[in-house]
Length: 362
Ligand code: NAD
Image (cartoon, rainbow, N blue to C red):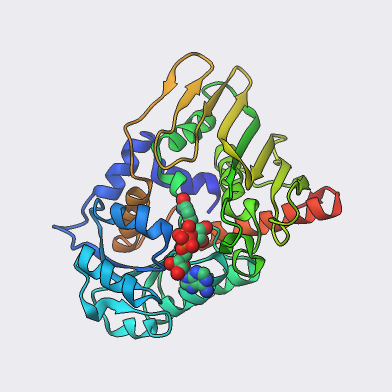
């Protein structure tokens, strides 16, 4: 399925609203929520995903995978998780005997996603994996293959694909409300902070700003254009070669799409407040700024109208959509193939930056 047709499948004519209905509908009678085990109890799990799982209608936090017994005790007390649903990274293949857990949500450093996804799939669980999917195309493919072999679904945590402001940006482009989109500008970056964090260690992260947050600008360019890039150029800079010894600090890249549309994107680990999308069409523009924050997304259009929707918990909405796809056995909007595509394009961006040449993609 193409990006555009997958999007239409969920967005339909009514944009965000129909997504909510898809996510909230019932096949036959009340649906017992799917049990979700969080694998990796770091910052994202603690501050975003566990709270979101208190709001989901089709998912419930039933298990955890952690290497820290003290954390396990704290989470058990806070979320009422029984001891039989607590695993560590070495024992979680035993989940195969645990009917309380339907889905494992992998929230560990990027280069551990394949190991944890494959373990979960072999234990008979569906897998929801955080972005970026992994650090190489080969590992992404392995994850897809293992989930297929196990007959389990694999989803990637592309929360913006489920968020109403982003869905509206896609609709405006698709329905050509301002004519054809010709140029897309997208950027996401922040100041990385702690020099000891795994994000700066290539072995665990696979790359720096691009892999971590540049992927949002890439995603936005792809889901607004509805196309895949055929030519990529890029430049990279390191103003702090010590801190960013192993990974990229800042990259600016351009993409040409088959229609002739262009995207110009930026990412950084060394500046704050970068995070917007602006789509320039023949008769005007539409934009989100900030675009990628968990809350407070603001949208504008060149005709003076606002792009405004009630606050949505990005994680609750994407998890319910994933659960719905499992319950109905329907394709998920952001499957493993979508994660692999982005990793493959990011490898082309790195190649373009390294060689200084335009990288052509088929
Ligand atoms: P984090 O460092 O806060 O948490 C990572 C967790 O993995 C920790 O609990 C850590 O103990 C555990 N872990 C297991 N094995 C490890 C090892 N060998 N080395 C280091 N840690 C190990 O990171 P985070 O910010 O929660 O990010 C986790 C994943 O979520 C990453 O893939 C990241 O890209 C993704 N993420 C996504 C979003 C989003 O908006 N979708 C936001 C932040 C992070």
